[in-house]
Image (cartoon, rainbow over all chains, first blue to last red):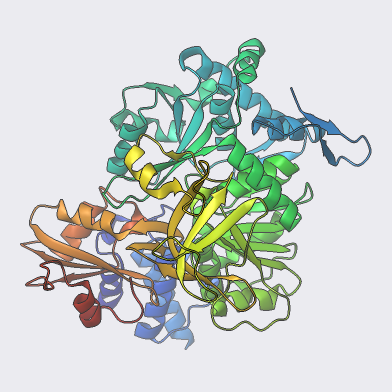
Length: 76
Length: 524
């Protein structure tokens, strides 16, 4: 989880990740952020985020992202 | 009066005489396709007849309190009702200034201060924010105006005094002094450009256009007016779908989108996120893009999956009404190097001039300058900047002839096509937006604790670098402060604190040294 938070803080340090559960739906992370984030998460956690995983439900909060990472790690 | 004569059987147009007001497009489409969906978003859809009625209602409401010739700010979501509100302002004899609800308060105030609008149209979602803005005019709620009684007599009186050189809209772009510039465009410019645009690319009533660009961004002018002129349908794509390729592709197929006129960055994101792994939009046959240089690898991804589609690279700043040149990408032709910006649209002249204001010799680099009826009227309430950018054609000493200096560098290739070669100043194209690096620097310098700063752009990675010398300011502090004054797309991605800002022998910030030391790749 710390690594995920580190990546997110580096990406957009001004966002309050702890209290935000609409990062995508609220427009806080945009399409450019997602392109960068997907690449960073793939490298950091040795996972392959597929296009089918790119839905708001998986990126709206830190918890949702962490759950996606856990699921993809189990699949490896 | 509608100036078109409609052929009974074919529905094609014969122009009796030239239209002088864009409302003639709306009235024509409402007469021919009254019940056809014109503008649709996630929640609502309006036919041409409904759009016409709402525009007239809004126009009647505004005409009660606003004199023709004035700006009307339109502060609302990018939704299917917004176009009718724009044209409501036009029915009232005014010009509209779209304000994006995503912009920070400070920037909205700067725009409002520049235009001094007597009225601001606002929807329910943004009403609370509108109350907080520094605005002394009348706040008019969109929902109330759309229900107003149509006063045909007043609208007709206003209409009878229309001339085609009057302003239609003002769109604000980045200004190097820290204050955005309002580019003022006339009816005549839009009428002329859209005629060429729709004819050149065969846009018709059968098309469904998938809107990506916000309405305060001039890429959307093509969406709005191509829809209006041709009787096509405009589907507004929710912004968050551009982060979620499966949803985006499903949207394009589900709504049978045939035509997209997008910022280059939107096409690149879709290709980067492997959108085509989900599905190929079945009905898409025209892909037009503009705003920055299109990377060939992403364009090839799109071409590979849509081999039958028309791909067009469009070029042009807001000041010449959307675009002044185009390049149709040849089918099955392998692409290498950079994509040309092609040839001028009909009724547009492009000159490539050297620093002595002479046409460059074959293959040489010069500044791209534009002439034609697409030229903006100027920058609203900004005669100095207007005089600097819109100048007398230096090749014509005989009579007044305006020319716009784009500040873009270009040359002709051996096939006579124009190539874009970057900027002659510190303006960049980032995420589809035109940004003056000086505007970011002005905002940073205004922060307490900043002694000096410099912005540079890494074109390869598309990062804005901010190098600063300051006291007690963290990266987070700077970003939090800048979010109050700059739009999100202007926020730097790389922030580097320096102990001492390097200076050159003239005592100015040494941009060359900073670039060499801190910014990888090609940069501005």
